[in-house]
Image (tube, rainbow, N blue to C red; front, side):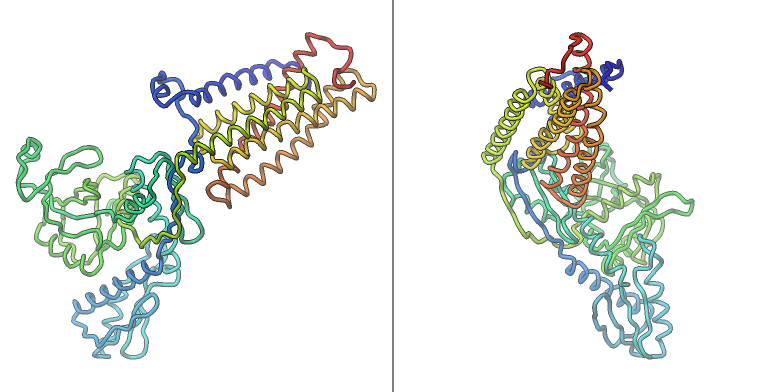
Length: 530
């Protein structure tokens, strides 16, 4: 194992050059990094909230309120459906997840049951039926969400809220915000560089404006772009910058949209299925019946996301947007429709502000502790194993630190204060490997073996222990990363990167350097055996 193999030398040299190249941008200012040639890496370490300063919010998604709203919409759907079929009712008894309808004429129960079964529709996005109709006695029908649908509402609401919150924070220009789920119904928002958490709350609390408006086909878009915009219209663009002249009158707003999903048209191509509540269905039906053959625009936050043509009056409260969508485009559009408005209220459970000064103090303290820890390790290794073997460990340690910074810069991992602790721990683990190797060499030399045999035994026989220790550390880091959140995950990620780089620097780099020394010096005795 102590042979000076060409592939080992090439690997060590290439890793050192690449590591220095990736870590170098961290020594430059932001302006200097931007001025670098395009072929050079420009990514630097992302400092976490505790190092850079910023705002921290813990939000609770009010899932019960969202379920109440869904049940209210369901009751209105039932009312409109039965009234439209001429079925009289005596009352609606609200209950958890649904409603029990009492009919005025028990003889109409079969007709009412069939109407509500049709209203329940087919399976939803999850592949399961979301609403069911059940006969209760001779004059009552229960129409409600299934237990599975009610249970799934919470997870869906949190996922949608995270996407809405992410878009809202991105609009502030905050760099690398961290938005993660915590538990079943909470969201943790960390915005480095944003010093006002209340401003963050205001932006997060805003509901995305989703509207359905008619496209103005009677006037020219070119004239509008030249400044001649009709008084009842406005000029908007889509994500690609294509201009649209749109009527100002809002046909239906996103508040009436209950669900959107990816479907398929008659030719099997991706399409967008959507559904309104009772009030939205009525307004949308009246608008589409009066504008057959005309395009209407779906507008989110002032941008046109689609402009389909009305093929027929949509009076059922549901419809389909067809076009030349790819599956990815359809999924993105569905995400925008479902995420255009917060599906449930967000309650602020906790807010914290980390000032830039505190962040700078944390950076200074972290840098100082890292430097002190590194210095102590250097002194110990040189005193214990001399300038040659101790110096080899120090060189490996320096390369280890460079590779960790390079890997974190490349992956754009966020460095937190616990991450610095993980960095220091990584240095200690790296030195442990060298200590195991050197002590094994020392034992072999004292037992009378030759220099080359002692060095070879040191690497080969210590490898099992080194591998076991690092795999154990890696497993612990993986557990922390999967089940932890925020700083804990930062610590786990830094530690995981350090496991790989420390094994590389402690074993392979030491092998190459010591093999070169052995080849050139041809020693008769092992220096550390004395």
